[in-house]
Length: 184
Image (tube, rainbow, N blue to C red; front, side, top):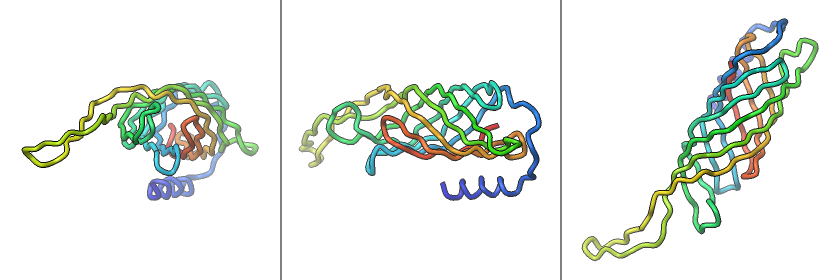
């Protein structure tokens, strides 16, 4: 994560500074790394792809999906910690507040809603195997949609008028987190 942020900051400083002189609109996509914390024990890390439409310089609407490659949380009121993998699917709205006269860089704020299609193993006790002299944990695979809703805010740095470096915070009903990525 640190190496990724260092590379993104280096890209920002090596690009030439010139103003956006045309209206920003059209198809926009981005890639983001997110890490979210429910508390100090339970967290979620994911890589996401966002695809949508930039209505004008200030408004973006899109869909976001990806892969949760490391997730752990309390699911329902079941006792125990469940590790899961999943696919998030969210709709998102982002508003950009341009900075300075040229409005080249922005502060952004937005909202996301959807769900995470998760797969995890739920344990329901253990049995003793006399032949192998060991305990066997009884588990069953479970598929579940974990609802998701949250708000986000951060900074959007314009790099060469076609790439933007974004870094922000996320606050959802599950917890809080950080996001970093590039949009095109």
